[in-house]
Image (cartoon, rainbow, N blue to C red; front, side, top):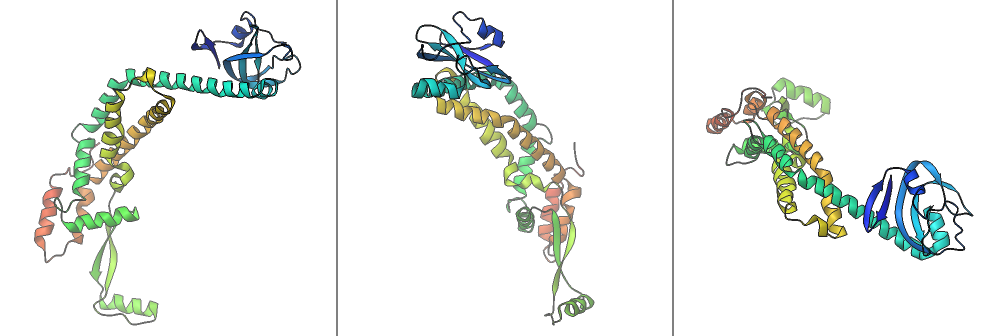
Length: 307
């Protein structure tokens, strides 16, 4: 890759031959007879090119195209530049790299700006539909809200999410035979009544409830809000730190969409009557009202997984 500063504009050059054929270019320049003017280009190759200084000619893959104060041009690596032209070369190299980085940043951001309508359509397509992100987020949020479902359910999910395991357990009173076996194993007596935990089922799709998969955070905070702000940004006048910040965000967009898409898929697995029915075993039989309340919530969900 070759980038040359031509008339204050950084442009990509097709081949090394285009550099060699530039007027004034010398591939055997004596650094003792010429002073550094400025850095006008940078190159990075898989194959090595020879240093243009007459007393070096060391092959290298990365370097700069420079002008001299008397109008000649040549190519040198960073080490040669520092050796022959000193601090001024190092400062110019840093400035050129920064200018090049800013150019790339602006190009990437303009590409993103032109594609915003399509990006927003993709977000809305993910959000909408009968079982899209909006539906998943609404029902996942309900499973954490005692105002929407019994606290028995919210506590069960808090525990499973904390353990990052969909293994659902229930507590029941042990039989006398079970207590006797436990006492024999432990070598000591146990109080009566004694309660044990047993597996009641496996809740699938629990990942939809993990903090990193929160759909409001992914789609609204990380995407919608940033898109709205980005639309008002003047890309051509952004300073380096803001160019860098917006490019870092731009690089997260596809990962964020993928995470949201996965979260919706997990939510569709989680939010079915078949999947959540084992939670009914957690209810106290002496409080049928709470169980009935959760059954009403289950009735709002599809019976089986919906693709």
